[in-house]
Image (cartoon, rainbow, N blue to C red; front, top):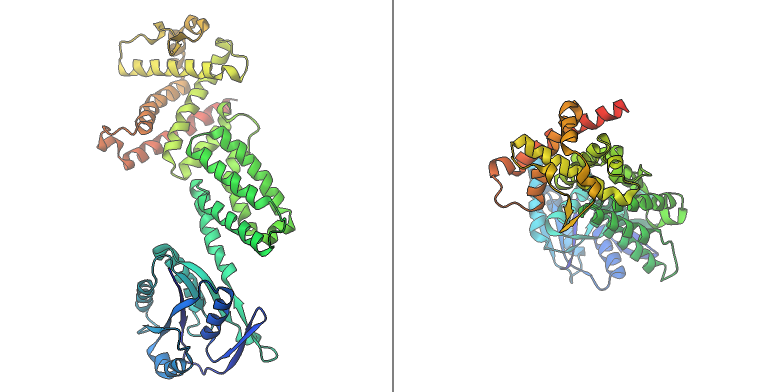
Length: 446
């Protein structure tokens, strides 16, 4: 890994300019030389070791000899030639050639003072491109503001912090689309460390560290299907974001996060809009199903869908009252019995001979509850068959449960034609339309 300078050479008349950055000055006709000086002064451990200049036939003919005459003898300079700047094909070729000279993990110094008027836009594209294909890191993006010259001093603007908005935008977009906060949490941690370094260890705002921790916890809860924990963390995260948005000190530390904070809130909204337990709140479960479905997170979607259907049937059949459930400690009993009813119904649909209602309900070797054995499963299953919405829900569960088990157990023997990724996607699309209809019909009746 090394630090490399890239800049463009134009066709204008290069005059001697006294460039200034952070109180230091450097006089030269070419801003890239000054940028190299300013960069290496601030980064003595990672100095620029090589440079490439992008030239056209016109700029090469007019100004290359002047550039070479002024160029520092200790820094190798090579050419990247752009044959025709008016052709899009040439620009695609430019990205190829730049990628050839940048190695994995290199640091970049880009000077956009001279050359093409499109260079500011191209530099952003180039940075994003090299970050992706070479895992490159931007060390400095500099611009000599000739129009801002005063008292024979031309300021050099270090635009590097602004370019970091690209990373923040990508990280927040990833979080919003998938719930994966790793990249976002890394940026927040890095921002916090930078603030600590610049403040020389002074005690500063604690919000960033708390945000990073909560984001990580939220994502881990999603990845492990701990929806209650995800909701609890999301509500804490919402409060932390509220504190961040109203704190000038916090916003000053991370202006990029301030700009993107509303998008983070949008991503976690379904997990914060509840005061009840998710496990018994069908309206919240509906929101979460939609959240996972829109993001094509099919594994957590299927896991949640199965539990949603169990809870739906438990409420519709009033299982809690039938088994004498008093509080949430009895929830496992309610769900256990409801899932058994649904499994028995699934056997009936398949024409199985097993009489599920005659079997005692056990966990391990212990009978769960005598009250469960006394309930008449046959009556409950008959109720399912005569009520249209209950029949739809039970039939859907009979389709969802085998797919959930197959996915959770990484079923290597699954038939590829019916269990390929595309086949599962089609199943989920069908399931989603059906469950929304079931939940909405119950909501309408309520």
